[in-house]
Image (cartoon, rainbow, N blue to C red; front, side):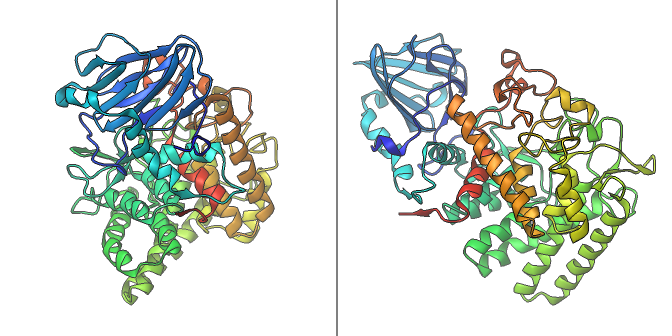
Length: 536
């Protein structure tokens, strides 16, 4: 094991799990661990709860990835690694707390074996920790990274991506990815698309699988659920970005046969959106909006955005921009696959969406795109990062693109220390610093950077790209974690930001910024490497 090749920042909240790259994962019985605060140790989070403490002090030398560790503590050297999805072996000082019955613990000869009670194999206590670490470390060691880009934050991002890959199981027939292993242990639609975009820089087969696994969940009518596990699916969908991701994966290594296999399901899904989310028949789509104030529109992915505070039905800027991009992309796919009639249909649909978005959702005075309240018959005056999506999707005009870009330097709207906040500084919700009510999300920044470049606004794109990379790396240096979102004003570090009304990790996992978040890692890789990372 080459220590310099691995992350060396041990702190609280870092996730560990067995990767589908190394073998078979187990959705029901697989272990998921998290480093603890206040001591050097792990808390098992799935399938049950258990605390392991290695030292009351802080580690000195440390290596910590998503599936093994090797540290020096005052009590001595401690090493640990996943043997498989359901067993973790520790060698060295280790105190075990009380199990809740779903996790077994066995000690012998200076080693501690932890495993899922349902499948516990005590004979694995005789395994060699060093051998397990060598197996788990092989993948990271096999990567050849451009020297000027290599570094601990990048290795951390790659480690996160590795451990969020799960093997085929149940209704999911391909390797699939999950946002963070805990608490989001299932598969999400647009998360998977952003994961695939990162994976295209590393392993095209995994990138293909990350998209194919979502398509595995498509229903006969074309509907694709926003969330799926090996044994269940949800009843709402999520932003249509699958064709966009497929195009980017395919650009890396063109594969016409693969496009031919996925095209029918991509087509059926976009057609389902067009047929089922235009409730007023005016040609623009509306997200499903729910009654939960902490998640008024899970379908949009922007759960608690102030966009949804009062309205019931909105012609949404982001939804329709994504649909326009999907239509544009599917037209290209249809041309490549020789489906001339399909290409014409997608061309017409794209043109209609572009016209409607610009006619109904653009406000010339504000120089911005707003959602349209269908029932009230007017635009809602909430400046949100969704208003930049016409840039990302090529929907706006060059003149309007420049007006949108001006907001990125305007301190009264989006010109803050870390751009691009989820709402403008003038919005009351900005002070809440709660998910989509102020903080900065990496997927939005990635989309906006891409959109600015589409319109030749390279200076603005490069500045946001650099700011994004720098903040991810800065916070990693402090906390050893890639976070779900960040404070655009840089007043509060991510662990103290609100999530769904409060910051209170003790009250449940959904009231603190998620740690080791998947698309933060995968899009950081894409921003940093831009398709230059290859396997040795």
